[in-house]
Length: 440
Image 1 (cartoon, helix red, strand yellow):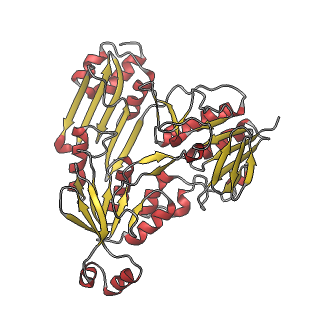
Image 2: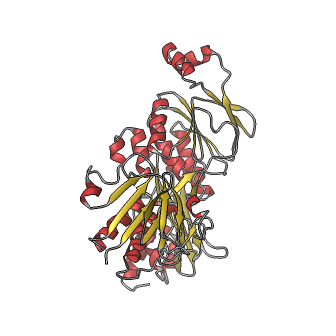
Image 3: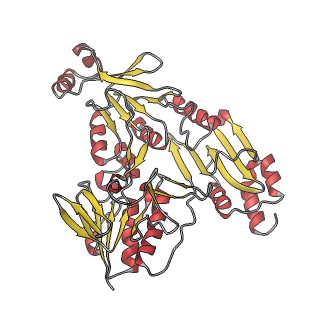
């Protein structure tokens, strides 16, 4: 029997789910719904657009202009206003209705702005959409003063793109280190030192208290822009900004970019009976509390491989994994269990690679191993539970990081190699080969 599948969200989770469904059910109807005017694109590609390495079309998830039409996937550009789970209906644009047999909610997440004055001023942006990126490119001229709020994963990706445009960049991070959700104090501090040596000012344990239009006169504008540019800036209301800090003092800025975190886009569920928490609650099949409705990606509160708890993992590998499993179960050809996504991040910041896998912070009372070379920006930290590797955090090391993930995800018993790795964590490949050959 031909089914009608509807997917809300045109990011990686939505697109991969649509493709999976089309392979499994060649005759079923598939509608992919997104509320942005562009074709389905990847937010992770936006920094490459900022750097000028690709044009806007380079961010598109599928490059062929007729890709979705050729695969008989309808793409609808609109905003869904409500869900009726009993009638299996979606409503949009003054009461128009779409019926579905199975629904996937893959609405992703949105940036969270801190509750401070001035966040809505011209010149203050998030960097979340292609429209955002185009505005940032317009302002990010060489030597422009830019304040970036947040040095998390997304903030560091934006940092990389801005630095390539030769702006005068100041990063403000409220935690005591950079990328606090994937790096400990040692590695996060080393990354800060690396960025500062590359000409980026990084303020940790610091917060922006407020943003206002600068009171600097026209002569100040002319000191950083040509006369014509300065007149254009004032005419268009693009006055420089003054960023006040919680510890006192102000930072001049031609632009402020906010990258202080994200939240799941689950507003659609507020007027329905779909259960939510930090995200939409799902079971091991990625089903929501309404059995014919599934959720995937940043909006889904799914099983965490390391902790066994349910949490939102706002990373693209998890979104893609969710999508394939949810789509397989929507097709009802065979059941596919979600056994938990491993938390993993790999980040390139001005040429320095950092990574974290699994429970990289470790568990209280368990063993760990650490190796650091501050001068060469090399760091490796392993976390163990018994003789099983459960987490890892690296900086400046690119060899064998896939092995780290494999050992964590396979829960391999290391046996005598646990002690060897405690003494010398660089022996990770030797440990992997030995355990693979049954020599633990």
